Image 1 (cartoon, rainbow, N blue to C red):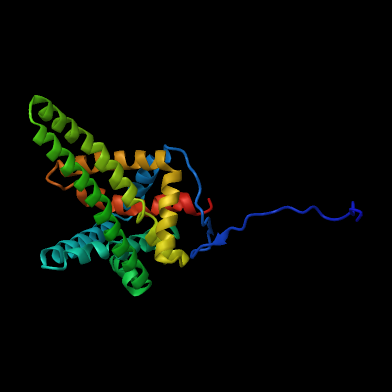
Image 2 (cartoon, rainbow, N blue to C red; image 1 turned 90 degrees about the vertical axis):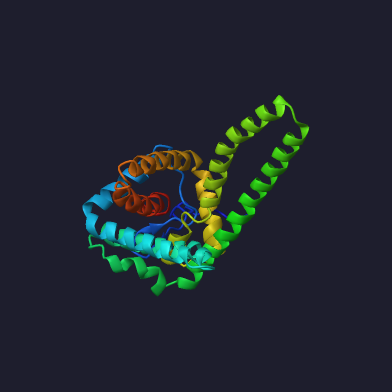
Length: 259
């Protein structure tokens, strides 16, 4: 039987914290936060945008021009969706620069084209496939259900269809949030932490589910903000649009970086 040395130093198991690109501690599995943080991600993003309003507005407008132009060209509409993570990577780089006390530059939008373009574009492609599959199933199930209801006829069928339409709203919102969770943090994880696209999407999905109350608060507040932004001839989008893009970074910073 081995005797324990009473003078040996205590041994403790310490969970490693990986260092991120900017020197901050990176939590590969993310952290769980309170539901109210969903609102904070948006308010913090607005604060960042107002601090350097000009470059953020120009970046967002340039991104919108790129997306609209690609969408208008036949057969290139899907390319704009594939490029979304690449463009969002530019906002992440710019926001990280601002966090470090640097100035945001419009050219930061193209940071994802200069580095990690392939993995970021693959994230966009996988996201596009996932969207087609999930919403395709929902549409198929809805179409079959409505068809069966119509074939049955009568006033009950009309009430059933109205009920289906009302049910479709929360179903689409829930499906949209779950699908978006695949891409929400993936650009930051690929760009700043060298994760493979599929691993980054899995991590993004798991961390979102772990913080579902905060994600729901975020999505509801973001929806209200965008609706309000559209009312004054869409002019509010000049601020709300950049803020929603920067909120990808503020949420990632809260969930994945050591405070």
